[in-house]
Image (cartoon, rainbow over all chains, first blue to last red; front, side):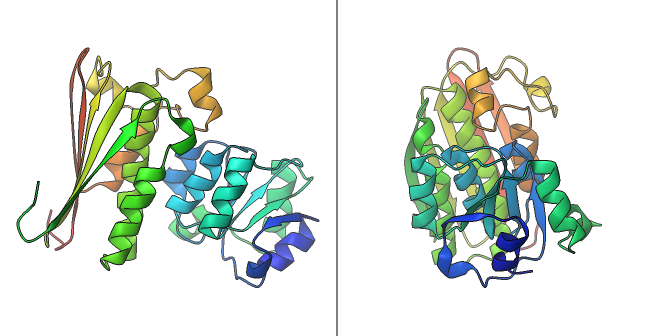
Length: 118
Length: 146
């Protein structure tokens, strides 16, 4: 599934990384707890989160995430946005809440990261 | 600080500086990428380094992170000046935390940090002196050895 398809499915706004929309995403995971993300995250993961400070972007960069979707209409703070631009991490924002956003992507065939670990 | 036929770099991490928390581990990651270290080892190193760096930012006054690289191993030592850890065995337990609400707002402080370091490192040594500080020694082997 491409980031463009994800954007459509989640009716999301692109906050940065317009040029990466054709990038392929193979799996995703959702959490507000960055230590959990560091524990389960794998390179290439699409991160869904409600955490809007710059730590969400730092964490995504450390694990080489393919992008971040902020749920419930949230957007990252300026620091996070600047950092994401610097690091080339695409940021999206959807009005859907975490459960629904994850549900939509999962039902359309985007597996969770845990599936890959089985 | 030069290791045998290797590389050694040191950085200072400031306690309480949440804005830059993670920036040193990002630099470490970049250095390893430039040196052509295998990607899966870089990810594990970066995660362990980042968790330790967050610990310094959350709990200590400051620390020096030293990256030592030899053909055999990546060694990250973080030596902090801070309160120290009362009970290391307890601190290593998943879920145990002394974090404040501010730390939790940052998405950390859930008692996962030290176990995450241990999980990602090939060898992890933690020592602490109460009222003085904590030293993290994180090793990842490059030659497939344990």
